[in-house]
Length: 192
Image 1 (cartoon, rainbow, N blue to C red):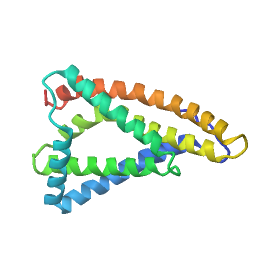
Image 2: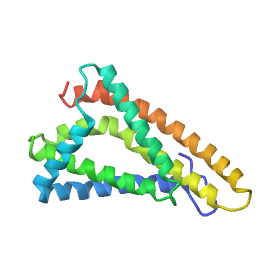
Image 3: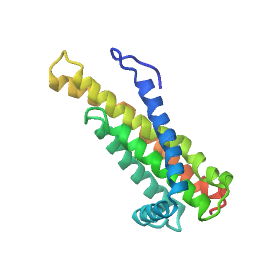
């Protein structure tokens, strides 16, 4: 992502900081689960129940993963319109959940960390930046609306165009992530 400056606003920095928030709060989620095992286990069970089981078909899993992640990315983008704050909360929440789930899978299921990382990193290197990019898109849109100058309608339209370009790049990354998660990750992590 090239570093364009919009006044004193740098979208590349926002993108990077969203990733830092995800990773940092992920460690907090892991620590929380380490000291609150039963709460973390119940939270993980509730998340697994909400997501539902995977299908026997890699293609159906690919579609399920892709559509879910695009929905989250869309919410990330739109949440940026709420004073530019929504993406920060969503990234923090998702990071926390990932940290909790990693600890539960490690502690309760007894999976070694190497296997957990093989289950997360191959698709996560595309998925997490894609979500941060969608969040950046929403913040760019909000900043464009708030910058002043042209009429509000024109700023809204210009912001939407900038945001949709970033969102389109996010969707491409999510397509790659879903393919990797459905077809490659299970084999690498010994799950398929």
